[in-house]
Image (cartoon, rainbow over all chains, first blue to last red; front, side, top):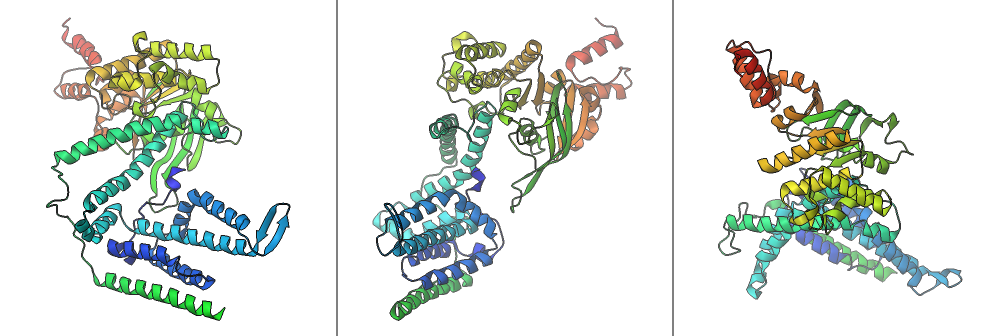
Length: 270
Length: 282
């Protein structure tokens, strides 16, 4: 069950996308997310969809693997779409007692659903092709200029890399704890809603205890290795841009231009 | 009682991280046996024991409990888990209640037993593992390592299982805590006459207690037989990264030097008897 969460998981493979500089991938993801809100017509969705599909194919991450990550947020997707369908005013297409479904509601629901879907797939593509270490070092170098305005960039990225590093560990631990409690007759699959919530207490208590213990040990280990924060700290693998990164930036720019331009054109036509 | 028929297990089947963990494992566990499972890290022993109570579903093969396939639609695995008790390696994975007593009661209360029966079973179990009444109201997090493990074992024992499976109950304990646990296990067997499966990597512990030894290597069963017979193959055991008890090497070396011992010994006591018989010293 817990293994199905692919958001934040790395999928090892040898592709151009994997080898790209993490700064490129971070910028790309950010711009992709922004681009989702730059267009108003269906053409934008088609272009974004095609581009996303191309990147997925190049990345060699199986699509099935990505879809597994969606499982956990189906609820959010359906929830959003549900409210959009029933609570948008406009021309009614279907009416039953107090329930009205409008044309506008259906289109916004479809677009909202698609937008969420793209956002999630897009950002999980980044985490699937970038190791947590690369990701945070990319963030640290990419945002270094913010230090001038006293943003603790290094501390934040260190916290992030530790958090990301702990996700799989804690997930595995949750799995084991659940098994240990199941071995004592705990039941996580049956019962009423409240019972199920109560059934999680025997999982969360040991999990928190172990998380705190681990955090303590890690802090001790870091201190033992003379970690002293940002000042004078060097990197084992300093980030350097290659040619492919330049090309990626260009393609990214092209994508934004195309998506905005076609949207304007189509809007003019309608 | 428990029968594994060509069980296979692959971790994360169908992904790039696919990893075989068990390969065609066939084992029969009979009533009242005391079985040891040894193998080095990653040999599949932990995966194997999670199959015994249906925590993990095999990717191939079948497991039968008293003749019934445990993955049948109408088979209750929840009930199976009360019959085949599994104690995980780290007690930290299961202790969560505010007091020792409440924690031990968790198992039997999941079985929907009357309150008195639950309490009675908890007391009995705690007594069997040698936890005194003075500790009943203590938080399980304040106990020593050995005490925590004994409470964890009691937590499973309180369900009155027919088989109890212990995953490396002595790992990471000091010699004192180790002896506490081993004594508790021995006591359980004596008192309850149940089947015990002990996963361990301490050859000395295994040799001292178990009657039958299963040796795992790379997800396969390499040896399965009476403890003594398995340790006869100490040279092969070494090849797969394991070893026989030290006293086995000692007696083997003595035989090589021409001292007429009746055979190799697996425990210190046994070796002493042999040497006494040979030398005539009392």
